[in-house]
Amino acid sequence: MATGSALGAWELPQELQMLRDTVRRFMREEVRPAEEGLPHDATRVAPDVLKGLQAKARKLGLWQIESQSEWGGAGLGLLGQAVVAEESSQCKMGAYIPACHAFGWDPPNVIFRGTEAQIRRYAGPVMETGDKSFVAISEPSGGSDPGRSIQTRAERRGDRYILNGTKTWISGVGDSSWGVLFARTGPSKGRDGITAFIVEKSFKGFSYKPIPVIRSYAPYEISLQDCEVPVENRLGEEGEGFKIAEDWLIHARVPYSAAVIGIAQAALALAIDWVNSRETFRSKLADKQAIQWMVADSEIELRAARLLVWQAAWRGDLGHNIKMDTSVAKVFATETAGRVVDRCIQMFGGLGVAQEMPLERWYRELRIKRLGEGPSEVHRMVVAREMLSGRGNA
Image (cartoon, rainbow, N blue to C red):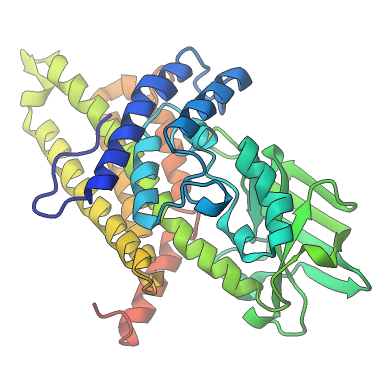
């Protein structure tokens, strides 16, 4: 399940090549063997196995990839995160499932916008144990325009805020003890009336339930009924929530997009091995022009997708505004990955949709990826708006 061949004159910096090789070796020698024998829709390895993987990841410097180094994380920039995400997704369970738990990859970086006391109380234990946390933005009223669709209300009463509303399609709630949740505090119906809160699942008035979907693990719906949140759990000032959410979403799209490329690259590697060994009509599948073009188109598109993700990451690490860059990368990467895995299933024939192969699971996962972190149509709208206004020219 190796990454595609060399990309010409431009190469990753040497330290990131070494990082890529380290993650690739860790996945090959540790994570993928740990998946052997698990049910086809398993969402985690055994707890004792996971602890062993986490210990090895720590020794390799692969712990809490994106978290700040002063708090015990690897402190990787966006380009480093993209490299790790692509390699760590190349396993049976797909993007982030065993590898995310093995590497940590939590807490969400929004927590580091908080006070030192908030970071110590909430990020500290997660950094140490690898436990999960969640970010709750989307609501039944709409998730693609959070600046206006957020209806959850937070009313201050003395030393507490009282939250009422519903969040939906929230990943990781079942495995978490706390998360960052966004609610409306001001009279404004726009972006400047949103505030971020650190909410514990144990708080009075907080409840949740899974939402079964086509992939192997479920997102959740959160219900807040007079949920009491201490004032000291407000993240930032009132009205700063949208900016915090937007920054997190924009930067999170880089590893998100890189991960789907990894899944598709793994699928293509499996398909190439298959067509080189499978014979039909007196010759190998690899000798058929239809197969050759599937392979060629897949590799061409994956190279283009990878470079778009890397460009967005590189510009982000330089401090540029990458809102449009990440929209371009997210659309192209997720749609490319879906096409590639679809072609790979076609090359395998009936075996491609059998549960003994990971392809059908990856296919289901990638269909969701075109919706998560903003659907393709919304990102196309962002790109069009930036270009038509003259702000998007390179």
